[in-house]
Length: 618
Image 1: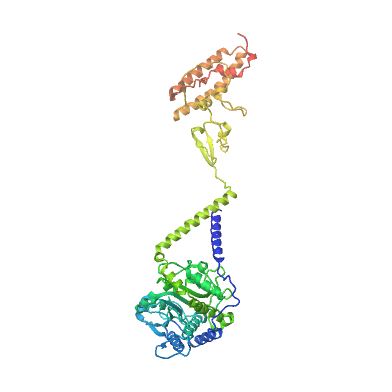
Image 2: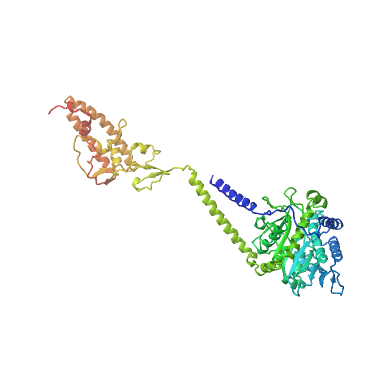
């Protein structure tokens, strides 16, 4: 019963904590009926871009030729947007008065080589050869000074259509419309907006399409390890990832802790009526391996290549599609359809059928980023979060999490014991205690009494309690100064034996004559010879009893004096012979008791049987 109550209490506490986590605020508290989208980015164009990308690049398996073909498709689209050329620097004049004087839109492909990939992925085989690439575009307006702060926006473009070479992950024939065609299409729209509208920022914007990311985020990790990107990483004050946009909700996750940028992005969403959710600490916590080395747990909102940049002490923002408004034990994209990423169900047809407003979700994410970058205090907030980035090095030590887990167990155990004690006091449970039987050899005064004990008092108490040991003697008062040889005397004389249910002690017997006082008493020996003689003597005493009764009758008739004397003489001689052979012991008799001789005289026995009124006067 105790074990059941403990398990029940533990489950109850876990359920309460999980329920409290699920009830944390996530949905926006403002109206989203009339969102103020960026007009330059339309839902129709986003849908068309996604459809073209998924159709032409269905197989984008990591490390494969299909992944390389997808990188070439993206590179071509960026060229069409104006990247890879300079505007205004070559002397061309714009006819618009508000056109910038100068801007730079760089475009490059950063190759990932076999040795570097194997080192990061932990592959040692020389029989396989791996390669991949990141496509990088950068927009630098004329208003951004040299060495200005940088904002990095990224999305991975490969998928698991087939099994990647050298990887344990299998192929799922996953076209990757949701994961991550929606992120690629949204990022292409952002890149086009920058080169077309050419907004004036005091920072640069770097756009990266990451390859080799469907397997352990290799593209993001090698991007950070590339020495050519060291200066860019040091200037980056924000990294944004776009992934699987288009399902139930769009979440803007900045950090598990409260940050200044979290309030900033949520304020921009409210000002523009954007349907953006905040997972924060509400995101389900799971165990697993992450890019934050040594950290044995991760929030679902922390899953992604952006966590690599978080590990570089760069503030991050994860714009991710999901549904975490219920108690989930796994990463759920949709409450109705579940998680389809990296499965054969991740197709454009299913996306259009199950989530017909997917393009609006993509538009929401693009608008949030554009409105945020256009805000006057945007770069100040991001710079503040980077300068005040918490030191999380201690969190990357695995031993610290064992201490945390131990502390949680101790606290949970304390709470559980407190609840159990409260419940026990209110609803006490009586348990049957087994009784233990003990022998009170030296009397009850020498025993530690307990309610769980039943004592057999071999010294005190009544004969009934000694005969029936099931009667507890815990409360029986001990006999004061008991005579240790009272029972022995009673057995030898027969005076103290119960008669007709009456129990009397030797001291309570009636005496009609004074017995001679003596300090020595004969006790039967334990030897076999003494026992035989004792039995013989006992038989003779029985015969004497018969003779005594005959003598008594003769005395009444006036003829018994001589016969009684003769009998007494014979018995005395025989008793002395037995006592010579049996061992003797001397016991000093208590002064409070009268001494009774073991060899009781015949006259005493006679006095018991005859009536006082029958005595004849001498």
